[in-house]
Amino acid sequence: PDPPNADFPNNWGGYADVTHIDFKVPGEHLIRGEKFDGEMQIFHIHRGRRRMVVQSVTIRATSTGFNSYFQEAIDVFRAVYDINIARCSALRRKERRLVSNAHIILGKNMTSKFHDYSSWGDFSTGLEDVELESKRSLRKSNWDPYHELLIPSIHFYRYDGSLTEPPCGEFVSWFVSDTPMRISLSQLEEVKTILFKNVDENCQPTSVQFGHSVARPIQETAGRPVWQCTPREFGPDP
Image (tube, rainbow, N blue to C red; front, side):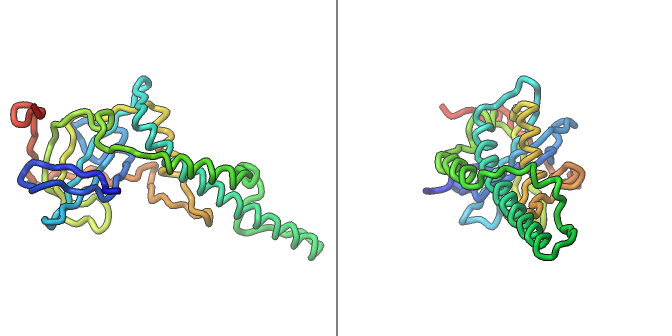
């Protein structure tokens, strides 16, 4: 199927396709000096222009902010996370059996320099069941990144800047929603678990988090102009 797409002001000349979506914890933008718990960034590419456009929305977590539509994304990420944990668990059980067999064959105490036995019991044992259920969740997914529960306002701040991760290219037009998405504190914690603790099938961490953050530190505007689009300049469609 065709990817989601969006049209942007400032002479973008037609719709731009979504390439991917990033979730950052904490947020990478301030709005009037306020820091945010997270941020969703929707990356677009326009075939006729040599620039990338990013629609970004900050995320504020509160005790009463449960977001049912955002939860659908969490459920899909959790499905992949569970598959990876199950595969890692299967690998560790296999390694444990190999070490146990070596104990029997060699008749002496041995320890694995790679894994701690005490952690093996913490992993699930139903690899096939986990993979089947997770794949069902992935197949059912049909998620709209522009849903009003995700981007609650059509108004934004705009500036020209860079990617926030390598290669940090200076070819990005940022459109930052002026109103944050709301989620619950428990949803924020689940996002942190998935982002910070995911492993691949070889049990290697996939996160680049540092200090419980996958966000680039806030940067100065460095003299770049920042425009604000309000209802006065940009009203809703008739």
